[in-house]
Image 1: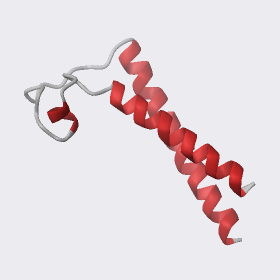
Image 2: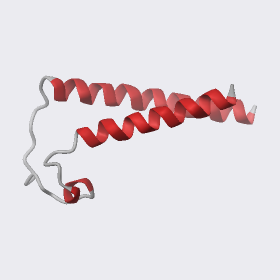
Image 3: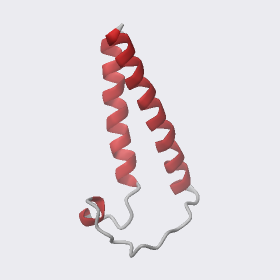
Length: 76
């Protein structure tokens, strides 16, 4: 079971990296590393962008749960 949890955490982490990369505004490396390419203007998420954001939140919660479960099974 420990191996399955490790594989699941690796798969979830790769998917999360891809989803977060898709959400980057401007698409330049500077904004990815903390630069302010958008000028500080906030927009409301709509349509596909909102769905992608909600999927990212759900996967991050699932990733956290898998990591906690892996830790508990490893310790116990």
